[in-house]
Every structure is written in C-alpha cells, then in structure tokens.
Image (cartoon, rainbow, N blue to C red):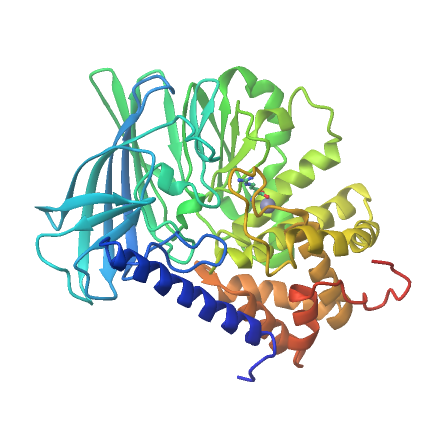
Length: 485
Ligand code: ARG
Ligand code: ZN
C-alpha cells in the first residue's frame, strides 16, 4: 500500500503516547508501585485500558436491591488471552468495593492504583494463554464526585451511560474501545422490576421473589457501549426489515405517548440499510429513560434516550426523528465499527451527524447544503476551541461535554461533505458501504478511513484529508469557492 501523508502525524502521536506510557510506568517503578502501565496510551484518556491481554468475553452479574440509592452486589468474570507474560494483571475499576478476586479459580491478591485494580495471581501468567479472572465487588449507582457517567439513576431504577471513560465505574474491565468482547449480562431484581441489557435474552429465572434475567450479545462490543436497564418498565416488540427483532424499553406509564415515535424505527432502519447496507446486529431498539442525562447514547442494540426528547418538549417532529436516526446510524458507525482510539471519535459522530442531516433533508426538506454552509462558517472557531476533528483537545476534568464538542459533530460531518464534494457522490456512497463492511465487528482508525477513501477514489487523498482532519484552519470547500470560514 502507498504510504499516505496523513500517517505522519498519527505515527508521531503514537510515539508520543508510547513515551508517555513508559514515563508513567517509570515513575511508578520509582515510587515502588506496579510496573504495569496504567493505560494503553490513548492520547485523550492515557489511563484507560491495559496492555498485556485481550478480553474475549465478559460475564457480568448484578443483584439490584430494589432501590437505586444502594450499591448493587456484582460478580464480573473475564475470559482473556494473554499477549505478554504477566506477574500482575491490571483492570480498570473505580467506584466500587472489591471483596475478592480469583485468577483461574485460585485466590489472587489485589490492590488499587489510581483507577486500576491491580491483581497479583499466585503464579505469573505466561504469554499466549487463556486466563479467567473473577471479581466479587459492589457497583455503586451514586455519581462519583466530579465525574459523569456510569450508572444513571432513573425515576424507577437504573440505566447506563459509560461513554467515553465510565464503564469502569460500573464493572472491572479493559475500558478501551480497542478491546471489544462478547458480553453476557445477568441481572437479579425484585419480581416487579424488568431488566434488559445488550443483545437478546437467553434466560429468565424466577425464585424466591426475585427474577434473574440473562442477555447475551452475538457480536463483540466495546465496554463504553454496555447497557443495562432496570426499572418498572414495559418491553415492546415489533419487527424490522428482514425480520429483525425490534425491542423498546419504556417507562410503563408513558407507553402510549411514546408509541407514535417508536413506530418510526423499522422505517428508519430500512432507510439506513438503503444507504449503507444491512443492519449489523441481532436486534435494535430504544431504551427510553426517565432521566436527565442531557444526551442520547448509542449503546449497542439498545440505544439510550431521555424521555424528555419525546414528551413534554417542544422540539419539532423532524428534529426528534433526526436524533433517532443519529443514534441508529451509530450502530454502524461507532458500534459495529468502533474507534481504535478516542481521537478517532470524529468517525463516530461525523457519520452519525451526516445521516441525521441527510435524513432531515430527505424526509423534511431541511437542506444539507445550508447546514454544511453554516458549519463551514463556524468551523475555524470549532477547531480553535475543540481542536481539529481528528486531533481533539483533551477533556478538562469535570467538564460535562468533555470531548463531545461541535468539532467532532457538524465539524466532522463537514469533512465528509468536503470529501463527497471532492470525489463525487457515487464514490462517496461506495466508500461508506465498503467502510462498514470491511470493519464490521472491528475497530478502525482515521488512517484506515483515509486509505479506504483513496482506494475507492483511485487516487491519494492523504493530503486533502490531512488538511481537513488535522489542520488548524478549515481548507477551501471544493465546489463552493464563495463559502466563508
Ligand atoms: N455519543 C453520544 C451521541 O452523540 C453523545 C454522548 C455524550 N456523552 C457525554 N458523556 N456527554 O449520540
Ligand atoms: Zn452521536
């Protein structure tokens, strides 16, 4: 393959991240702490993830006490393949109490280091082996100080919003989207509650006043996309294109008001399929939560929506529907194809915003070009405040919007628009289909997108996309010489 110019800065950043990671571990060695680095060197979240193993499967078991104010008792079992000799194994975990840990059925010592749980097995685990880690712990639904995400309290129970760095506030994990895995999720709750999680149900077990619900994913999933709903909810079933099971979870008393919105999903799935190809998972649906998160979230197969988006708000109908399509589009862009690092977030949000805007144009006559022209006018400002789309600035601690700034939403959709202007609609549409097909169930980088775009267009787009993705200033828009940044 032809090396592209855009790989330059990526490689340099990787190197910087690696240097940072080794500097962090050197400091820890000096301080007498574990030599395992506290992260995989993500530029935006340096402490997330752990080197040395690759998780294949999580089994999460939660016992809900019937109130969302008390910690849940939990057991997390992780099956992982080791990629290095490990005398210690780090997991990301904070905001719960660990009772005990086993590695391959033998008791293991454990200690906290920052937001890592550092596990020392009786015997070191050598490279190229399966290991099973079991952690008995609590999972606390109270928001930790100065942090957003993890469990979200709803009027009648709990939901989850882990993106980007909060899954490890709920369960011990390798909390980075570069390590996707299969999930089995079991929830035990009082009989008058209903629990739903990612994937499809495999078991419902009633005994002694509680019910245990088991769900399993058929596709690998990033920890940030895990979802568990516990509440006095109703589960609604309908059928999508090609027999796809569509399942929504709603607060029972709002069922009737939500129904007209929920009925839109099958047609929206069909519309997305007409653009980019088959829906990538075994089911889809909305989890409508009585909560005030202030955002929607594309949790895999079961996307989280705040009830206020639909009821008691004055949003125009077309807008609400376009947000539904945004979260749906994420199932392809962000979930099935997930980012290798958080700097690749523009691939998630740019594409979701793109299909949101395209849907609004096709179904409600809201001009995509007008939206992109407005984005062009704001783009230099967005780049200054949030960084270029593919090199976003690090989140400030405690800042609610974190990395989710306009530079990676309309600012990134604008990059896709520029690309479409540059290579033409047919090539752009082929690229989109190839992209989700080639990277289905995997992770992908900005460099992968640049390479595929070049391949599909039949010419090197490295220089063109370099400027759009990494430049401080917004480049001229092909075909719109009159647009002002
Ligand atoms: N990915 C979500 C969406 O655009 C937004 C999540 C915002 N997350 C946050 N922690 N503020 O659909
Ligand atoms: Zn989004």
